[in-house]
Image 1 (cartoon, rainbow, N blue to C red):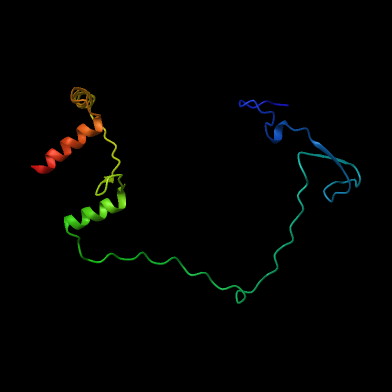
Image 2 (cartoon, rainbow, N blue to C red; image 1 turned 120 degrees about the horizontal axis):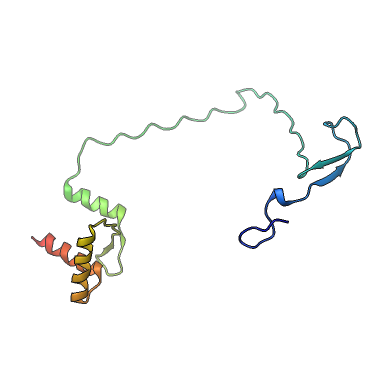
Length: 137
């Protein structure tokens, strides 16, 4: 028996010994001879009867994509819609959790980290303070 890397003994169909089946088979030249196979012999399926198209209705085709209206949203409305779709409600009321992934230069990341250590805050709080200060300008 083969052993898998996780230590369990079952290693799939190739690790099993072939089973021996006795009996008649339409595939064998001699009926009653021993048959070696790797698993149970599958039974053949009956062919489907030819059904007329009248018995089974046609499925509708995929709906055409809805065209957007020609109106363009104002930036304030577009921002509210974007945050409503992307952000999750935050713990304090009137706050949202917005997950961002920033790809920064190493020097800038080290500068922000140093600023956070000196102020006794975490890196996220420093970035939030910078964003709020920039938004007030």
